Length: 228
Image (cartoon, rainbow, N blue to C red):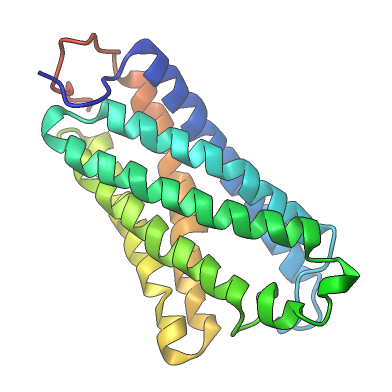
């Protein structure tokens, strides 16, 4: 008997689209971030608009895709691994809620004059601030928990094993970004950024390939066939 979702034709299509979209938006985000950093005279300055607003919009677009991707991972997982894929999905939902609310608020009201005096404490990404702390909670903790939980789902073939290693690497790097908080130096948080903005989009490409190669299941199939 199966536990939860199975990898039906619909789940397969959703997985391919979500993984491809995640990889694409991840690449666009990195390109926008690099362009924003190159526009600065000093790395101590904030990234200016419109690039900063583009980054916020890209994160908001990315979150539904990330949740859909973890839904597909849960559907793809064999019965023995669904406890891990379900954990990954729940943690992905927490991340999506936290970061979507945060970046929507920053995008909509962050530039309003009424918030100008409060923004350094509330809405800026200069440490310490409430916005920065929520962002760290989302990406360095719940993103890490999500992808680390997803990692045990993948095994058996070379492609699946590679995905497993990359997910574990991405999550470990994200957790390592917490060293910036511990040390009081946000430069160390860049370790985490490498995990979720660098390693994970590459992993999403491989997930799209894996889903493409995986035959859909019917409701009576419980185990995941190995894809080499």
